Length: 323
Image 1 (cartoon, rainbow, N blue to C red):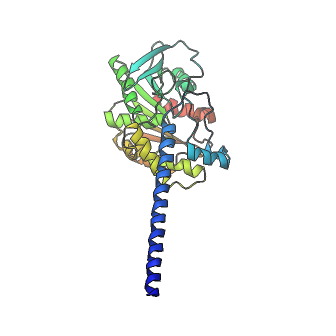
Image 2 (cartoon, rainbow, N blue to C red):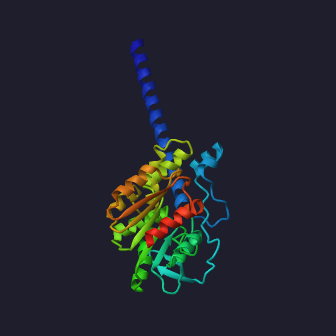
Image 3 (cartoon, rainbow, N blue to C red):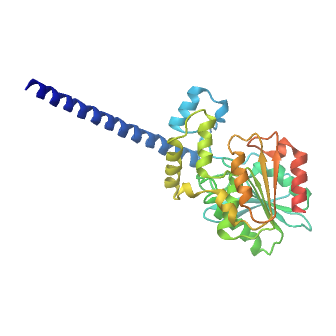
């Protein structure tokens, strides 16, 4: 009788232990999803505060890294910091959002280059590049994506819905009977160009891409790796909630797939010290391009402005491509 009672007690303890484990797993899963939800929101929605943006992961202390992981990045809305020194016109283009652009024109242009900025940036960051294109004889159209500069909203989708804004700018020039149109984009801008040309079958004279990521999942995972933290399962949860919050399936946001639909000449550029985009991602994108293409590497560049790192190489390659 005593043995039977002992067995019953052991069974009850085992069931309680299993219930506690299940409860702990559920609470942990719930907490991870809450953290991912708020982090994804702060990453894809800019704030109107003057709070400084969170620095790169490599420069953060362990305490700040952990705080960033749990509470998200400081993400103030990008604002234009300077204006063109040449005569320019500010124009508004209606897309899925109203976007603000600077149109800089000259007499007898060879064509027009439309310039698209990267994540958490704005069109004023493209003024140096625009000067090079202008010196080569091209008009330029510098674009603020939604959530940046003078454009509407506070949201970014890392190139997904921005692709429609690329299309709207291209269509605007085509309606004006402009010829020899090139698309230039850096990071998120490059991703938006790839998606726009693939999805909407645009026919520019060529596209110039700097450091586009291969897949949305990979670019999120790289941020965890840069912090020295494991990416599973938080990276997947961030991608999931980021897409849900912004109205698209983020796991399908893959520029290396978009590249298969590119049938115009492409100049692809990459910084060999880039810690956000891997060489394997760039190689996949390059291998999927089907038309005339060229890959140019910058040995001393990270995920940054290549023109500042090596002006001669950048200018020569750009000049050769558009000529």
